[in-house]
Length: 269
Image 1: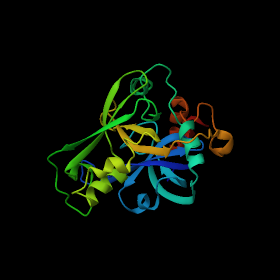
Image 2: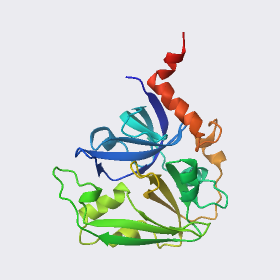
Image 3: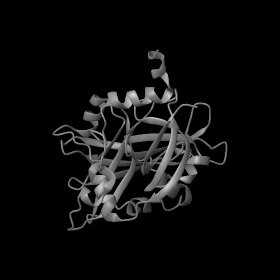
Image 4: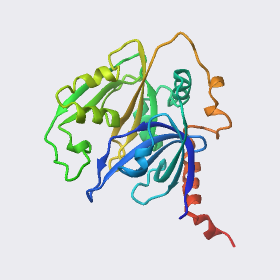
């Protein structure tokens, strides 16, 4: 089968979702050495069970017709090559991924640029939260997906442009807490350090497959503030990366997807 290989670091894992045919599917966000920020997805269990946050991974992927977002790849297999452990290195990696959108609101900017993944830092304006108690579906198998949970968590944040956003929190760690601690759901926000002013927060954002202008929070990264100012010199993640990394030009990403299918052979003699 034609495909591509993504070498990079896992910086977000979403809770499983149901597809229209009843399967449970899980997505992750990888910061690829060559691909930049990209989305991998596969059926829940199996290969997705082998990867976790901050793993250094080698992913074998292919283009799948079920998701035509430029940054999306169907995951076939993954090998774990190590793990990012240092908070200094994590901070450098996260800061290298912050979306540069000038005076624009990040969501407006990504919608206009037809992006589907982005990272924003919320160290000044702060973060709020909410929990919706709702009617929910009963799971028909052993997996509890997002829509089969009585609570739906939300993150509230304001961009530097002054625009307010209320977005569903889809982090796997959040839904696992809700699943395992149904009588103590409020502890989730303390776990995420949402109100802790001693922590810097970064919001990893992704849009939804069927409604491209709807965005969710894939993960809330949080690290204790420090007077030390790390630079990418202490982190090799940015070395030798393509122009524009980690937000590569969409034309380059589309060309990579076409090349992975072997379709370029149609134009050779």
